[in-house]
Length: 399
Image 1: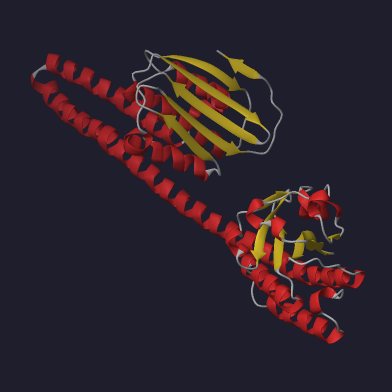
Image 2: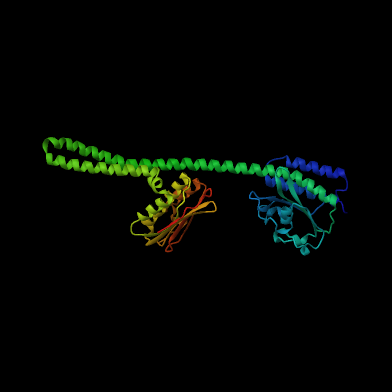
């Protein structure tokens, strides 16, 4: 039988195309659509298996999005770089490929053990492409028995591919929009939580520091007013104490303000601010390798706070003698790494005591991630990586 696997007349072809149109109109999900198309093609064409490979969002590889049993278990697990294997060749060249027998002799063929290609003799592979979307994926059919595929067979598969491509393109677009919306929702939730945490911290600082100082100052001012009448020497002493409390209160107020927006970032930039933090760490020698590059304000604050938390952890917990702070920007990503030679800890067990949740949230709020590597007796390494628009590097500050 040389017609496409049992499609001997236009009526059967039309029935298949109508069934595919109904399938692609059923919903926006990529995998269910690909699975339905694979089942329709094998059922209507008497093929043994059908694979639907969809181009990833980065457009550098193909992922198996739909397959007939038993290969449906491999959906999402099989990835093929463009240009790799027959499927990758079809995607790169956007041309059909037909192998009637002896696949292993074809230079384009690359075996994929999970798909058991050696069990199938013949195959036809066509690109799934449409004008507005371009290449969307590749459609493959395989047979155990030897079978020749005619030009008419390939043309029909190409028509099916075009029909499926439009629907898959819409499904991929819908999936990206849903993912973006969910990411925005998570970002909003994290931003609100971070704001509330910052407000609680600031409220605690004011209550425990500034408010208590002012209460004490009021007490000494009352004592001063009384001493002015009965004991001038005591009045002088109360005035001295009150003046000291005013100075302390001003210092704590400035520290609270600095907790909202570190003034050092305005004065020195991120590299200078990180260097200033390192110099303020008593008893620990901190080596610096800091790129003198500015980032968006919210990213600078996040990285500064992460570095601040890291150094506080070193001071409070690590008992380290030396530390290293590295900051650089490359390929649109900023990386801050703080390491020490201290006692280390078990991240899973001790993370709460080391402020890891706070640092992780700060990194995630600016679209980045935090990686912590530590073990008892082996020091600690904290790395924050944040995506940023590429900007020219002005130089490197090394100390």
